[in-house]
Length: 114
Image 1: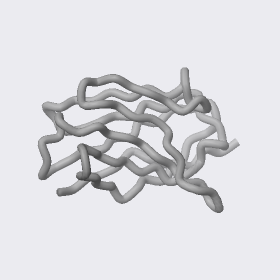
Image 2: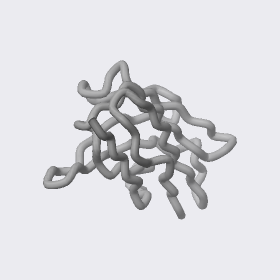
Image 3: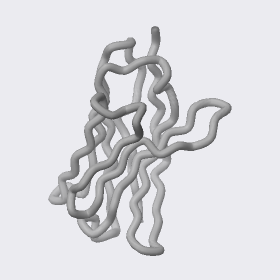
């Protein structure tokens, strides 16, 4: 099983990025997928999640700015991040979960400059 997170980079405040989480080795459509982030010196926190049925939820801090979607045909979940500010600078991790099965990607760094 592999989860490949990508799409991070350096962007100016107000800009946008789209993160991708591509899965292989699992029946991806059966899994809920969550994005977490960990900023330097802080604990990992949940940013957003999408269920196998496509329902989404977001942390209050990103509501209205981040949008999750999934393309099961491509085994990929996308996190569209708009109106970025320096406070979202962190390593972003994707996580696929179904019952007790729990897989993590390697993380992708998002840096927002002011």
